[in-house]
Amino acid sequence: MNIIVCLKQVPDTDEVKTDPETGRIIREGIAGTINPFDMFVLEEALRLKEKYGGKITLLSMGPKDAINTLHFGLALGADEAYLLSDIKFAGSDTLATSYALSCGIKTLGYYDLIICGIKTTDGDTGQVGANLAEILDIPSVYYVNKILKYQNTNIEVERLLEDRSQILQVSLPCLISIVKGANIPRMPTLIGKVEAERKPLKILNASEVNAIEDHCGLEGSPTRVVEVFLPDKRKQGVILKGCFDQNIIKLVQFLKNKKMVSF
Image (tube, rainbow, N blue to C red; front, side, top):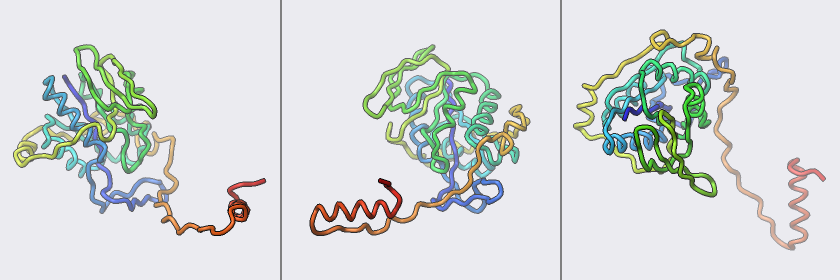
């Protein structure tokens, strides 16, 4: 079973700043860490490999220091890793990111399964996996909680919805997105870290994956980040005391003053 795991390195902070001209996240000088949701993806891929055999290939896009996240995955037990890193990829939105990853996957060649996290902490859109599957023209299933069965031509999964769960059989190759809490992620051992240094890790630029330049980066991004900010801290509420009928009148007047209701 050939599995491609898409990982992302995200800023290890809540205080994200953006370039006022481009809207790009400023990553320079900010420590990076593996996207927390991708920990569940790695664990699920490792369990599949242990049960059915095969190979795990890690794929990421980002600055060159994102190799730290790939080293982490290799130390856990993945077999090889590729980082798409090129100034032409800078400023990519979810569509341009998905395009670049699709170029990387096509360059890698044959695969049975692509696994992504449900979202990332720095973007929180949850769009890349679905976009990627659309570009590659393969089926995708989001919110996967369990991988029940793998066969040569299909995979059986359970996915969680708001009010129920579904069991689906999906033709291979396909893409699935793993939900938070689907498993208990393991941590790398000292031996795993040593072995990771000997495993293949290659950095690829845009031309090496045959990416069309105007499909990448800011030029290939139809959306722009206008502003990123932390929500204001919640202020102390107003406690209304006294007669219920009078409090209702006060509450309605308060909402009207805040322009939250109009009648």
